[in-house]
Image (cartoon, rainbow, N blue to C red):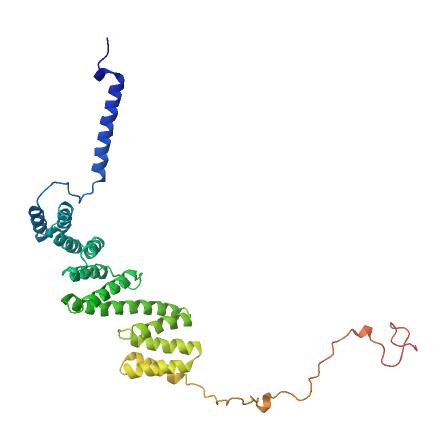
Length: 317
C-alpha cells in the first residue's frame, strides 16, 4: 500500500523548510523597515496628497515628507506627483533633514528642468547647503557648495525673488570664507611662517576684497612683508589700506609699522655701469702674503752653521 504524498517524510521536510524560509523573510523585512517607512496601501492621489498636507500643517514634517514621497511612488505620472516632489523637499527642509531635502529638490530639477517651479527647487538646494555652514574652525566644503548653489540660482533666475535673497546670502557666505582664510593666516603668522601667512592674506585681498576682513588682511600683509624683509611691499599694502579704510584701527597700526621701518634708499645703477667698492673695502693691488706653515724646531738645521749631526745643536762643543 502506498503512503499518501502528504504523509511522506520528503514532503514534510520540504514543507517545514518552506515555512521556515517564509518566516525568516518576513522577519527580515520587518527588521529592515525603518521607523519612518509607510506600508504600501493603494490610495487615490487626492487622498494621499491631502493626508500629507494635513501632516505638514500639523508640523509633522517627517511624516508629511514620507507621504509626499508616497504620492510620487504610487502616482508617478500624475500632476500631483510633480508638486509632491517639491513639497517633499520643503518638508524635509523644515524637519532639518537637509541632505534629504537637497536630494528631493535635485531629483525634481533633473526630471523637470524647464518647469516654472524649478527656481524654487534651486533655492531649496542652496538653502540646504546654507543651513549646514559650520564655524571657521572647521572644514568649509559645505560653505563652498552653498556659494556655488547660490551663484547658480542667481545666474539662471536673476529676476526672481529667490535670486534677491540669494544675493544677500552670497555676501554672507563670501565673508565666511574670507574669515576661514584669515583664521589660517593668523595661525601661520603666530608660528612665524611668514610666507604661508602672506599667501592667505593675499587671497583675502584678491578674492574677498569687499568683505569685512579686507582691512585686517591689508594690515597683516604689512606685518608679514616687513617680516620677510620687503618694506616696499609693506608700504604699498599700508597705502592701499589708507586709501580705502583711512579711519580704521587697522590703518593706524599699519601706518605705525611703516614709520618704524622706513625703507633704505639705494642708488640706482645704470645699465652697464661698473660696481666700484668703497675705498675701505677695495680689493688689494698686491697679492696677499700667506703665512708659511710652522715646522717642528727639532727638524730645522742650526742657524750658526752647518752640522753633520742634526741632533747636536753645538757641533764645536
